[in-house]
Image 1: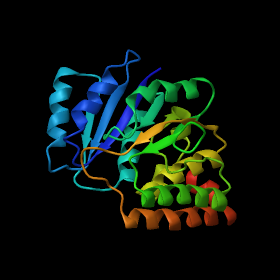
Image 2: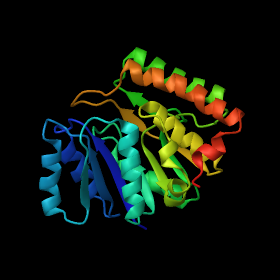
Image 3: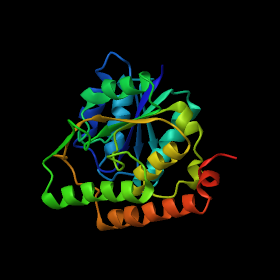
Length: 246
């Protein structure tokens, strides 16, 4: 079973070496693909130096600029599928997602789930070091998404996710349009509408200690409008055509 962890980066020099070392430490043999959006702080150079001593386990794809989280993951999905990976995992570079949870995430897929979601909002999950306004935005957005779409996932914006290959093989990435947190919702919505089994497991999410958060008002606005748009496409009968490959 080939497993790869996708880590999008933009100015993550404080975190990238440590997160790579942590993932490589597991005996289960995860590979890593860093998708760097032209970080001016030298993140890519740090990754290249690590690749020199870990050939065949760490890879990097460099893009020309800051093109958005969603497009970075889609780039990584396509790369992982073309290179024969069975489990494809999304993970932040800043230790918000604990590398020690990787095996737990994959075990959920081993047990029969098609998509495993590291969830802050199921029993046992939590968020640490978050200001009150961010908790309100996140929990309110999750509730809003469930109400509008009918999807039962309690943490639809979660970014710590393991996809089985067959799920990503079934989605037309060219029609996944959102680039911020709405991208995370749209991927889960597409997986759900295609009939794949999504299972959440509790995680402790710790806000970043190093670097700068990528959260913005524009990302929140995109998520609010994106959920309405996704549901409208479904109601009008266009969503299945929108997500399935021709």
